Length: 420
Ligand SMILES: Nc1nc2c(c(=O)[nH]1)N[C@H]1C(S)=C(S)[C@@H](COP(=O)(O)O)O[C@H]1N2
Ligand SMILES: [Mo]
Image (cartoon, rainbow, N blue to C red):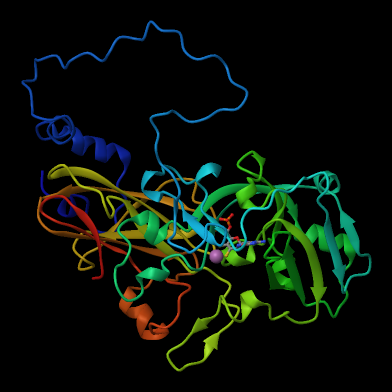
């Protein structure tokens, strides 16, 4: 068998069956690569341990994971833990859903402790019939469930000038993907009746930051959700319990948590979060404002920074791709720093504005390798290289860093974050 690049060919999808064939054909790659030194074909492998004779723990009203599972959110280095953020451990995730307990967090003033029975949502401003809604009122309205990722536009802000963070959790972990359930904002706006002059909606959170963002009415009438459910149960407090906006594909900051007020207005309110923060300083000294959409992005999560490959042989490269503009159309992977590319397999279902899992078998020859992934979304937009992005944006902005990520695999198997 030749190496992975020659074997599967550029542009061809690689099926699971062909990967299994690679694992087994040609002298026991599985035994050699994964199970230590090769044995003679006749030898019986050692049997697994007997079933335990100890009784297990009793049934429990609310589950927790195994005590052997250790993946955790890690906190950014910030002066306080209330105005801070934590990163999702993408290197340990499988599939496309982020467990609620590992969803990244971004709080401007900590997590408020809100009694849902006392929580209210006020909808007012340029509307015919202003209302104050309880949770029970909202739960009576027609609901939808949608699987969407939320990405903070600050994801990767440390990576503009130098490869700074050691692992994919800290370079890319400000994105998570959940199934959200709630009422379409369009339904609520239909109930209150928007006046013709109402062109924006100001959303306000019930936390101590009273965080506010203005959203154009067209988006609010399209796919914005007032969500109370996350992955089959109520929102987690960290995600905005009991109510948050989900603004599919737009920067995380617009997904106002602990939502208490929606005011229909004629023009954007120019709040702190849309003037002093969440704008992008350009090379000519002007700043872009209201850069809502999270453009297509992808990253290899295995192997990634901090991993150490035990030896040459066959691996499955795995990663996540997403786009704020819709579905991921394709992901290409390079193992030679972008000189050649191969199409990765996309795991079904491929959902709009959601994490999309990609995979590609790779035979590592034990030499220096430079792993990259590049995503194309359904609009035809191609994820840029860092050089391409910096040529347009310069090095003075923080948000919306969606460049191709490079991981170097050194001959000793150590994987590190590099710019290439
Ligand atoms: N009320 C309120 N809403 C908020 C925030 C906040 O601090 N207060 N943080 C925003 C930011 S910057 C982001 S990226 C997302 C993060 O959502 P998450 O914590 O559920 O991941 O929430 C947004 N909504
Ligand atoms: Mo954010």
